[in-house]
Amino acid sequence: MTPDTPQTAPVLTYLTDLQERLVQALSAQDGQPFRRDAWQRPEGGGGVSRLIEEGHLFERGGVNFSHVAGAALPASATAVRPEMAGRRYEAMGVSLVLHPRNPYCPTAHMNVRFFIAHPRAGSDDQPIWWFGGGMDLTPYYGFVEDAEHFHRTCQTALAPFGPEVHGRYKRWCDEYFYLKHRQEARGVGGIFYDDLNEGGFERCFALTRSVGDAFLLAYPPLLEKRRNLPYGERERDFQAYRRGRYVEFNLVWDRGTLFGLQSGGRTESILMSLPPVVKWRYDWQPEPGSPEAALYTDFLPPRDWV
Image 1 (cartoon, rainbow, N blue to C red):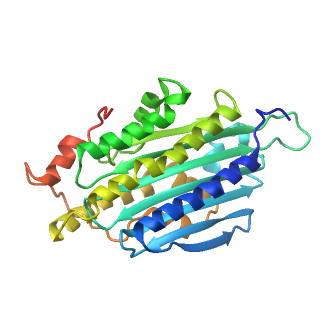
Image 2 (cartoon, one colour):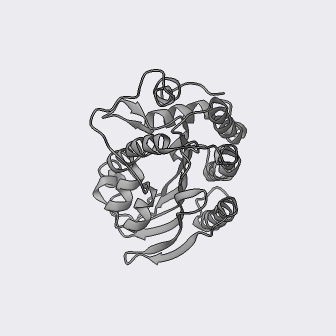
Image 3 (tube, rainbow, N blue to C red):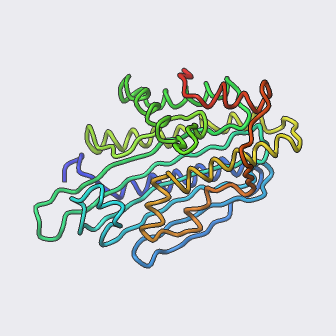
């Protein structure tokens, strides 16, 4: 086995350590512990869900680790990649979504993951593998300096892997976290990548570690700046309305949600990303010149923040 051969053991070690580091840091910031919920999947594998609800800072949040395996992929996967039909597979990752209570604190998402389809027994097949991941920010009331800090941290994390990488993954994020049926971005973006296997296993694994490690530099400082800003029913009402967009994206467009549900994943863990309080209104429009309108005019249209 050469050093560049895909290996699941070091990826699993990194992911479980990352989950623990994230939970410890976020729990300390909130002041409340995260619930621990370990689970097993009858088809193979399992995971550990770490959840917080009704915390001091987070109204709801989750930091989930999963490692699922199976003898065959669901139809949604083999329809796109028919060469993976009939292969045993493993999918592992850490996925995080945090919904603070204060509307001036943005929602955040981060995910790093690894997939491998093993060679068929008795064949000359090569393993099919890739990494994916990223992080993005969804404010309700935007602050330019917050968006700049988040994007600058993402840029720094990707800088060792080439000067063009951040721009490509930033554009990919803008295109992916987009509600096509609304013609509207979910938030101010960040970085996103998938199907990453260029440059070999070690490079791809190093890039994914850099992304995972950068989250605690990118997001918690924003919470400290905004968590004590006063707010009222108007801000909470707008937050609940905008959270509806988050639900729409995750249930209609998100590939991870679709794969998890179709592959028999644990529904409670998959849907932990949904916010606890949400509202929809018919054809609501913000008042021109209001702070709510500024989100649509100044923050949701994709732009270069760094």
